[in-house]
Length: 150
Ligand code: DAT
Ligand code: MG
Image 1 (cartoon, rainbow, N blue to C red):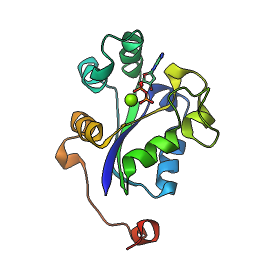
Image 2 (image 1 turned 90 degrees about the horizontal axis):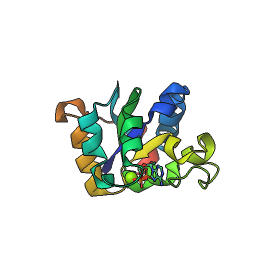
Image 3 (image 1 turned 120 degrees about the vertical axis):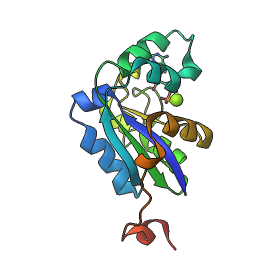
């Protein structure tokens, strides 16, 4: 089992897409083990996007992610990191395949609806930024074995 961090970005919240984005991950079989609505403080956004510091889009990115509330979640499941990334689609929604979240809901690269960790290491790092250990809940769902097998 693996965990990954997802964020329904400000445009997702403002456009009323919180439920639809979370529902897709749920329907896939990923388990929500942490979830909250928050407005990200600047210093937290800088930590989260540290790998992009210095890039041309960095200031806009940090300004945007802090501009309005987001929904941050932790999803658990087999290969959750890559499964969630595949469901999101590529970074630029113009190029993202139909059927992906970005492909279905976005058209501007700066407004691509959702964030998802890009690897197991970044998932651990990002989960640690947004969630205290006590905010993450391990639990069984009655249908788990019907999703992930025995
Ligand atoms: P991803 O979110 O697919 O992991 P990333 O980590 O390379 O993509 O970039 C983080 C976010 O920054 C991305 O979701 C949208 C924004 N971004 C990336 N490249 C950009 C660009 N060339 N112009 C504007 N925003 C960009
Ligand atoms: Mg990224």
